[in-house]
Structure formats: C-alpha cells, structure tokens
Image (cartoon, rainbow, N blue to C red):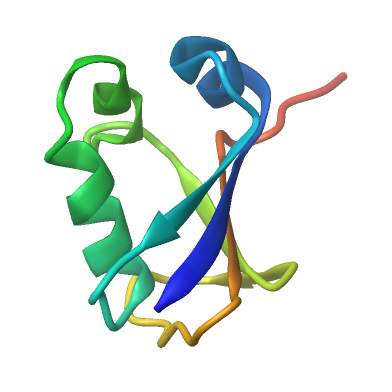
Length: 82
C-alpha cells in the first residue's frame, strides 16, 4: 500500500524533509515506524527512546493503529509552550 508520511518540528529539521510517500507492507503505525528506523542515520530521531507522537489521518493514535492505502501518518515531538 502507499501512504503519506509527514514530519513536524525538530523531526522535519533532522530528516531534512516535511513529507514523503512510502510503499509498504506494514499493517500498523508501529510497523511503519520500524521500517523508517531500519533506514538508520537521521531516522534515529524516530527512536522509541524519544517522545514522538503519531497521528493517523489527523487523529492521535498509538502504534497499534491500523493503516490503510492512501493514509496519512504524521510524526511529531511533543509540543511545549509557555
């Protein structure tokens, strides 16, 4: 299936891109994260050791969320403010 992945804030800066298209056999958000982490290098910013939030079609989800063809998966760090 083909999905769109979006990166926000410091993740976008680390990866040098705001989005990409991915053709994958992954079934859920966690498996997509695993695929991205397997690329190594800058994708280490998505490590499970870091607080990274995930949204599927603009709804916050956990890694068990099932994905489907043409889905949009977004990764972003927690937002702080004051």
